[in-house]
Image 1 (cartoon, rainbow, N blue to C red):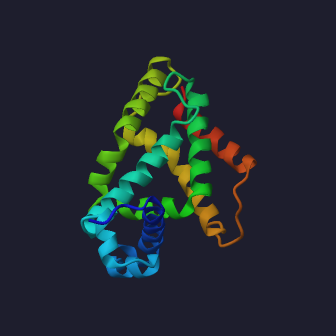
Image 2: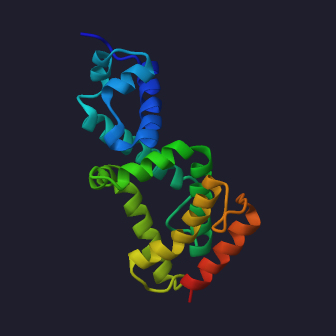
Length: 196
């Protein structure tokens, strides 16, 4: 039996992420991944049992990395303003430093694998954010609203800005580069909408 090579495994993961983003799930194949990774198809099956296993494992790993990054320097006991701003900083940093992973995450979580991937990668983060949400409402720093509305208002504007950043252009087609002034102005508008 052949042994696992962690360097090869990392190359395979990075090539798989790139191919998934480029070709989509339907256009992705184990044969093409093996060719792009300069390994045999048989070697792929040392790491993954099949295409579905590979997609799920990569999605879960990206999700865990993303949610670990969201937890950096964050505590559910922070004030609402401080905690939400930290979440924004962490999300911006992750999106700017790992754009391919973010695109792959978007693709996979909006696919038939999405529910499984989210369930396996989100558990601890859900608990942390649930505590932050409850604490903020109890401290009267956040208006009592549903989690869905909170999520949409708290992060929707940020993700729109990050899409403009990714595309390098604004809604009108002009050039766009995310900067602190834009982040802070948008954040203040979000705070106004969510705070008493």
